[in-house]
View 1 (cartoon, rainbow, N blue to C red):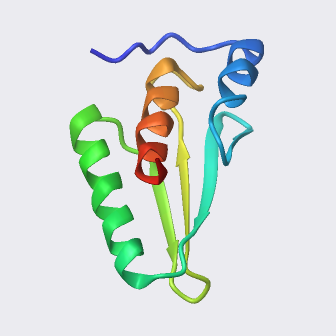
View 2 (cartoon, helix red, strand yellow; view 1 turned 120 degrees about the horizontal axis):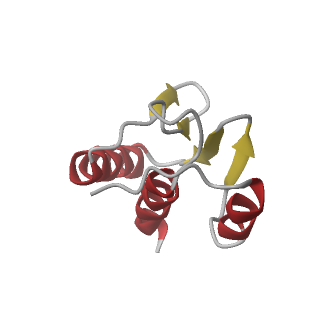
View 3 (tube, rainbow, N blue to C red; view 1 turned 90 degrees about the vertical axis):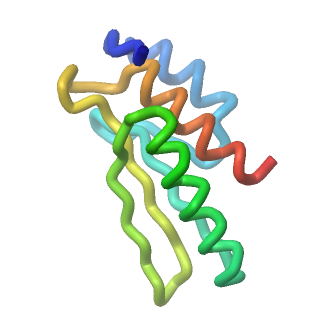
Length: 98
């Protein structure tokens, strides 16, 4: 079950120390990924889709084909801010690069 308690700015900043590429933007966590190889882009998008299915948490995703970048933003809309569920989603997305 998702932890949907809104995190404080201090808690978010602490988590961001370990979330490479992610930053707080207003009430969202956002990251922009540049992936050169089209096969790797496909694999990354499959990974993100699996993370979404596994967590039942649905980020906004923008795929810029011209620049081969994927921007992902997550927030817990029902709570009006960033929760542990968003942190967990970001961590699982980043696992692709490990």
